[in-house]
Length: 371
Image (cartoon, rainbow, N blue to C red; front, side, top):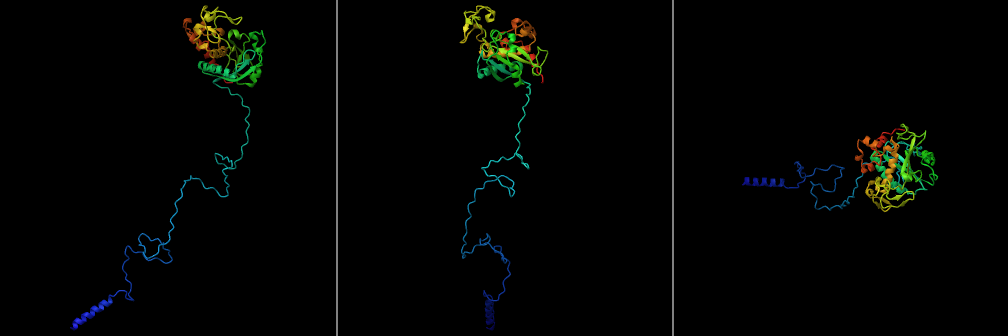
């Protein structure tokens, strides 16, 4: 019985010892669980937002949280160096010219007035002026340019060089009535044009004077001791002091038929005398402007501007031929030079070469010099 009482007493004592929240019980030193938070050091501000590892206190009042504002659209800016301090930048309204290359102490450039440049002779162009005798013709500059465009094409085709019109001048009078062809040299103040056009190689004179109305045109040369033409004269022993002139009938007709030329009247329905390639009796056809030989109306020369243009090329090239009239296409000398017979020469080739032998164009090609 005493033993039972003693056991119960021990059990009671043990129950008292195990009662929770007993005062003066030292804290346990168990390790911190993984989901617990270590003690916060002093003077350290802990964010009010709970961290992911700390469960929020359901009894605490939530703090007012201001939602973040929407991010503004960000415009990327180029990598521009920072602007130094104390630098005044121009406003958009100011007209500021920035130098292409930064440099120090930039100053306004002085205005440079270029000196009058001497003419530099071209190695591929023959320059010409046109002088119009108003007592004979009065074409517009546009009409002259149309013809010169064709002439330039043929010139380039036959020589490899360009023919360029520089200036058109109109003269009230070229020469007095009754003057001969040989007087043409004395009827212009040539030096005036030469002084103002030092790069000039030739001059085209449009006139009915000096026999051009009958022949269609002719060529001549004028000598100037102080002048250098970049195309030297073949017929003047290779001298370069000559200026080349063409005298051209602006309205000369190709292959006319049935005319009385002394009275400038059409009098026959068929060709007369030496007309139509010296074939009398050839039918005359009216082309809307004049009567032309029937077998010539489809030829290259039948177009008026082409005929005038080829006449210009023809007369310029005469100054580079050595045989005068025998430099014409179809002459015995030209046939021999070309290695052909009279029967081989054709109207198509004659008009392609503007009526001159091909070797004349070769002479011109070899005439260029540096002035």
